[in-house]
Length: 353
Image 1 (cartoon, one colour):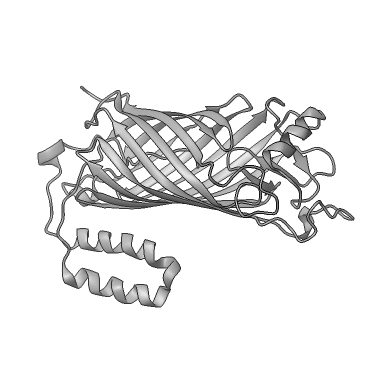
Image 2: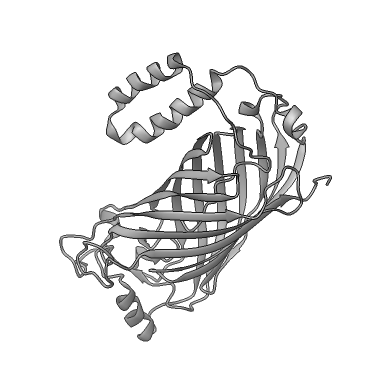
């Protein structure tokens, strides 16, 4: 993922709680049963259990009532290197409050529908999206997009097998040979976010599952996706998880750690008959990178038409990548990080300021 700022609804605020022992014991027992891979999700669940174990808090007294209707928008523009990219994401959704509550722990609940255009020099997308946030700690959304590649900046390259070289230099050679082309298609994205905040410390995990359906060149079955820097099977699936551990100071400065895990899923049908590819043993479809995140938010207030202007810097080092780190053929040095700089803002166009 390129950028996902730590912000819930338009009225996200700091929540300070003191966990009860009874709420933590059951979660600790669950962690032993689930194993190491589930520890992060269990830690988040522990935060939620501790929060719900507290005495009720009054949100209206601090922030006023949650609006019944919102016309929420957000815009994020990012530039990155390793791999190179530039893109803007925009979201415009109508949000309807699910239920009214005075509790901070259940505030900012909504169901929303809207549109989500995005654009870069290599492609453009526009989608219809639906989102559901029953509580501030849990959010689901789905997005169905129409995608068009312009045939510029080396994209779109497609292949008859995933076992090929898709390093930066190989993509340059494909473009020089005129083998990249313009095309279009659709893409379905399903996502879930689990997050919690105790005082100045926040944890969050964002899962995305992506299924593209493009009009590829005849005989080709897979393509290189610049957005995820991964090979993907047409009409196949890719999943990615961003996990953050953050420290927030006065809701303005954010520093933390981010780990990103990405995997594509292939089967025998994704290799054309009689095609071996450059790497007979296969190319590892799992990617890992980890690093540091810094964000500065100029201000963040409740019910504003223009809100939360934020500058983000993210530096992650590739831990696992077939052509960037410990792969079959490293094209760049592993010391070079995935570096991203972004700017975002959001607001509620129906806000009564």
